[in-house]
Length: 194
Image (tube, rainbow, N blue to C red):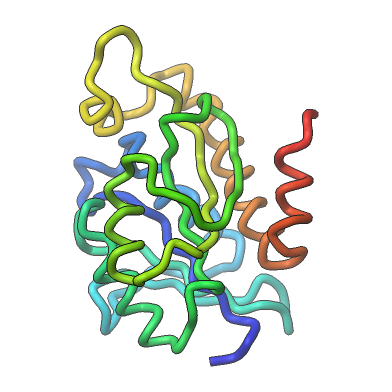
């Protein structure tokens, strides 16, 4: 596969009942990217749905993917996609929900721990590496004493849903910046105070 191909995986759970959950914000962001590049998700030889296209004519190729398995078992499908496309983890971008960031925040990083995120934990194990790039989409902490596991499986609130299109646009912009400009330049853009 060409050096200019990137695998962008949006984490989430399959099925309509999970589609609006906070835990599925990664899949929502890759939906935004697919719309931008005019690509449609289709069944794939791996246990995922895939949409392929180019960031712009002659530009980097994006392989956008949403696993058919549940969040906690994301590793197998991601590993299968890396093998299918002949890509190393340095060409993998994982877009996922992040409890430790306030809602409506996007941060970028490469490597590091999984921070209790079972989807990331499973990918690290299956890929035998944590050295992939992450687009961390802030969903904030649950209110009061609500269990974080329950919180991530709830849909965004009405107020959050009003801001969600901008958040998804920012997450998609972050992926494009990583692919076009590199991680450090993208971090400077997204991490600097506005």
